[in-house]
Amino acid sequence: MWLTNSLVSYGAALDAADAAALGADGAAAIAGYLASRGASASTPLHTLPGLAAELGLAELRVKDEGFRLGLGSFKALGGAYAATRLALEAAAARLGRNVSYGELRAPEVAALTSGLTFVCATDGNHGRSVAEGARYVGARCVIYIHAGVSAERAVAIASFGAEVVRISGDYDASVAEAARAAQAHDWLLVSDTSTPGYERIPLMVMQGYTAILAESLAEMAEPPTHIFIQAGVGGVAAALAAHAALRLGARRPRVVVVEPARAACVLASAQAGSLVAIPPGEPTVMAMLECREPSLVAWRVLSRVADAFMTVEEDDAVAVMNRLARPSRGDPAIIAGESGGVGLAGLMQAAQDPELKRALGLDAGSHAWLVNTEGATDAGRYRELTGESP
Image (cartoon, rainbow, N blue to C red; front, side):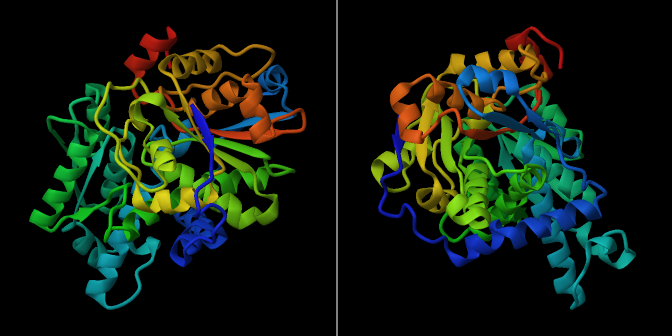
């Protein structure tokens, strides 16, 4: 299923706060954060000439976030950055002065940050990032997971020193429980989804994701003409779409948001003309994208700068994992988790659908850019679906 963006907000300017966080200045701030951690090297940007030729495109490039900060996914850029920023702000408020990244190990700063507790809900990757960020600043961390999160992902989160609390119910139930705990215990909630009155921190998380496109643009001679990017609550899709629009202006690429057919809350909102929640349904193999309501900030951005919305089926996601694991025609092998290659699944579907291909302007002159948003963050599941060891 697909539709082009015909919302009344399409093409409108971004809100000032969104533009400030997701434009060039926001990306520069993320670059400074990464440099402070000794992690300024870009993640790989692969070129897939064989698959590009097969799809009738001029070029196909994939940014591989499976290598980001050793956490295995793009989420490493968001939660850890927000936790670090919030720790510095808390220390600055107590000390009455600005506190830099370089002061995190100073005794007077460490004494303050060690008293903080961060909390969030997660399908796996965001919680791992928040837990890593909390450990980096010496703070406590509590992560809520729902019934569908694998044991391997829970162990990975706990390996960063976080207390992992599993609840019954789905992702949205874990989000509600994390918010309740934050309010009850005066903990710092670092969510990647925003709600009315809670926007600043999710926008900070989204700001981290701008590094993905900023790094790629620095490496490419020409900007892409098309971006196919997956969405759960929509944070990374909105961050990349906004950064492309703000950096490239009239030369910005067409942005297509791709979701699992079983959890397409962004597309449902586009159909309804406003942000909506979809009812619980059958689980999707694309576990990191199994969300039932878009983030408020992400929807506000995507309604203005996304060009189209589409869904892919379960088999599409698994087929892409296998195609990337065992490429042909000289393309590099890429390890993509269940949700990592969903943007590519959308591109392949679009390239094979004459009507959608025309609507999106995909042709022999198109330069497509995608993101492998996660590596094999659950190695057992990866082996089960691909027959390969990550």
